[in-house]
Length: 115
Image 1 (cartoon, rainbow, N blue to C red):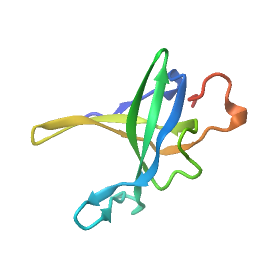
Image 2: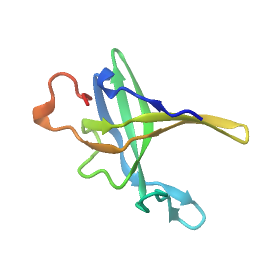
Image 3: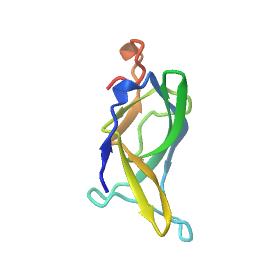
C-alpha cells in the first residue's frame, strides 16, 4: 500500500499524549519489535495532533527511544507518514516517523509543530 507523507507544519501543535513505550511484537513471550534495517527497538508514542479547533490522538512508531519526550510536552516530528493497511478483514492506518523530539522553547513561534 502507498505511504502518505503528512505535512506537520499544518498543525498548530503536536503534544505528547502518551509517553514513549517499546512496541511488543509477541505478547506471549514479551519479545519487543525491532527495526529490520537497524535492529533497534521500535517505540510507540501517542501524539495529539492539533489543527484549528480540532485534535486527534494517533499512535506513532519511531525507531529508537525518543530522548526527553514526556507526557504533555510539545514535540517536533520529522518525516511523519501514514500507511493504510488491511489484514484478514481488519483495516486501519499505521503512523511512523523518523524522529520525535522535544520542541525547543526558543523555536516556538506560534507554530508548535513547525518542521
